[in-house]
Structure formats: C-alpha cells, structure tokens
Image (cartoon, rainbow, N blue to C red):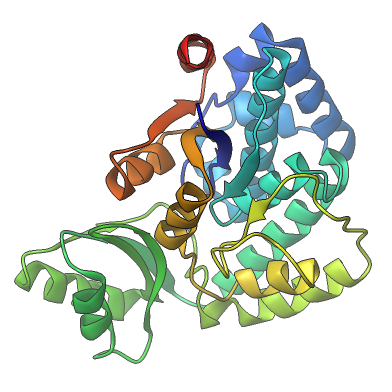
Length: 305
C-alpha cells in the first residue's frame, strides 16, 4: 500500500444533521464539537439541527463544515488511521492545515469564522452565483467564458468538470451557451462568486486577519489549491490569495499521485471530492467518510490493505 491522503470537503457540501451520528459514535469527534462550541457557541447545534437555509449562509457554512471535517478526522485517528499528506477543497484547505498542525483546531476555527464573514459580506455586495459545467473541455469552457466580462472559470475539478463564478445575469446567458455546446451547467448552492475577483475585498480583509495569526510549519505535506504543490514559503500569502484564485484540484490530485499517494479518503459532508478523484484516476482508491456507516466501511477497507 502506498501513501494515504486525507482530503477535506469544502463549501457546498453541507446538509442538515451533518456530523451528528459521528459525534454520538466517537469520543474524539465529540471532543472536537465541544471545542468548537467553546469558540463559537451553537456550532454543534447548527450542524446537527440547523436548517438548510441557516447552513447555506457562508458565515455559518464555513465554520460548520470545518468542524465536521476535523471531527471526522479525529474519529478516523481514533481508529488508528492517519494521513501521510493532505489537502482540502477551498475552505477544506484550512481544515487540512489544521490537521497538519499549522494551527490548532480552535485557532483555525477563529480564522474560518473571519473568512466566512468576510466572504459573505463580499457576496452581499454583488448579485453573483456559481455553476458546475460538465461534459465540456477546459479549453471550451474558457473560450465560452471569455465572451463575457464577468464570467470566471475558478475550480478545475476533474476531466469534464469546471466550476465558474459569475454575475448572475451573465451566468444565465453563459449556461445557455454551455447547453448549445451540448454541455450541462448545474447551479450551485453557494451565496457568492468564490475564487474570483468578486472576492477581492474579502481577500484583503483576510490578509489583515492573517497578519496577527500564528501559523506554524506543517508536520505533513499540505497541497495548496493555489499552486497544486505542497505548501512552502509564505503560508499566509497562499491562504489570502486562495480566496481570489482558481482551485487547481485536478492538477493537485495528479501531483499527489505522482508522489506516491494511492489511497484518498474524503472527510466531511458529501462525497463530491471522491467522485472527482475517481474521474481523475482509475488507478487509485477513493473512499469517503461522512457518517458512521461510511466510517466503518472505510476502516474495514483500510484494514484489508
């Protein structure tokens, strides 16, 4: 067996009740939720009992998913499964950095709370949205986007799957262009145009927050959304710039595979990353842990290797 990578879910994967059964099943996971409530009272309640609308607010989505991501990581470690390297999709990158000890869980939760609030404020200033574009090449999507002033390809997820961020009206017109090319545009349940120039004010504000934060050298490699390579140099600049730059997920996963990763475990709500990884490479094992059932299946699968 080669290396194991933990990959942490990001915004858009949230759902009511996420993490509840894991917290009831695992003492380590329950401790993470308790620590979250010390920093941000009500976080556990919001994850377990919050409505879909409540969880869809970026200021809530980000700290809740961060908490669920790392509670599941704690539950896996409780079962003896650890990662050799890690990455996270957008928001999930902060969970990956916390897992790798760039900062502790509670310090990271404070950063995530600030990030989410800044990104929500930026979102509220513009009528924007995001859509996943399927069945077209990266090149064709970039060609179609170039026709518009405010349509930006921002997440290069896997073969035939790119997310764009855009002005809402232009996004509707762009979706029609995609349909005309026999592609499919699926509008996402997010409240802003993330990883685009619309987030410039949020990035600037987060830079000020990071200036006062203590960020340590990671203990295991963390692959950056911005560069698709392991973190090195100025961690704070990479985190700030991530907000306004594309997520190069496909290249990131390919680079991890090139460095010996053959088993990926997605942690957090949903299994979108697992699906992407399977499309990027048929030669690796991609598992997900979002609840107790998938946790037990993953532990059994790893024990067989």
